[in-house]
Amino acid sequence: MADSSRKFIYFATGVTFCSLYAAQPIQPLFQSEFHLSNFQAILFTTLMMAPLGVAPLFYGFLLDAVSARKMVRWALFLLGVLEILFSFSDSYITLLAIRAVQGCLIPAILTSIMSYISYSSKDDRVQHAIAAYIGATIAGGFLGRFLSGLLTDLYGWRLFFFLLGVLLIVSSLLLKGMVRDVKLNYVRSTPRDVLNIVQQKTFLWLYATIFCLFFVFAAMMNFLPFELKEIRPDIGETSIGGLYLGYSMGILVALNSKRIISFFGGEVDAIRGGILLFGVGALLFFMQSYTVMFLSMFVFCAGLFTAHSLLSGYLSTIAKTNKAIANGLYICFYYTGGTLGSILPGAIYEAWGWNAFLWFLLLIIFIAGVFTQLLKKAIALNH
Image (tube, rainbow, N blue to C red; front, side):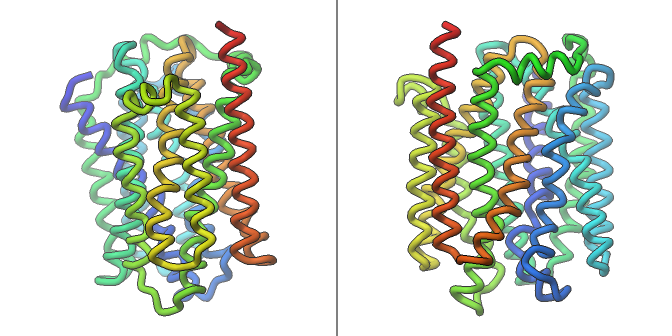
């Protein structure tokens, strides 16, 4: 994969994630402006995320017949046009409809890019290339949240969404140089191939682990802005967006994945270390102070992205055939966990408050740790 093409691919990934998460820190603002309930407000993120839980598998099959280059460029262009339309819309229903359609386009982009990276990278560089991709998703997730909050305070919420639309269209044009024929290495896939992957314990426990981890992460990211408003009703969108600075820890983690694996003595032990750190970060959120929560986010994100970058990199290593399907399933489990996590824990938060919400998340983190132990056993049996 040429260096210039690789840079544009990572740029497009980052901008896509900016689009996905831009609404999250300003959901309390949408709640106030459109007179919404908490549930109605979180739909701005949840509706966009929900298709990611089911669509990637479909796109994994589609990539067997359609060029990844063509799919990702068209999806980026349409996503950009819809982002510009979003910035001019005044109806809550229209805004939600746009976000739902955008959610159907994002898995086309992500599945295409992950498959493209897997097929166009040499075997000994796949782990590094996927880690760099994860770094781009982390950078995009942070910048989307932070800049959304900052520009909303300065100019209102519409400007940032308009700028995102322009950048997405530019990304589509920049990817003209992607290699056209990476799909020629694909093996034709069937539903039986999907079942065969999930029935293998190594894949099953890996997918179950990331489901739990992103369930917790999405829950925290979605409801933290509302809790901050409870603690400090006068808090501005810039301060809420600034809380996500800890998200940037994930970039350092993703780009140092080999060192982390070496430190722990293996991928699975490194993943377990990340889950432990993730749990420690969640515990720190019991202290309801903006300063403590700001620092907690660094620990929380470092743990999540240690596990995430290593799980996705390890998947690309063990998926010798049907990589598009294996990657699509990973995204399915990841975002199904995220979609459910952005809704279900909200019932606990509304009924019993922040502390009960956090105890529930810690239980899910413990379950993720159990799945990781089962993953380690499955790997040992295969060897």
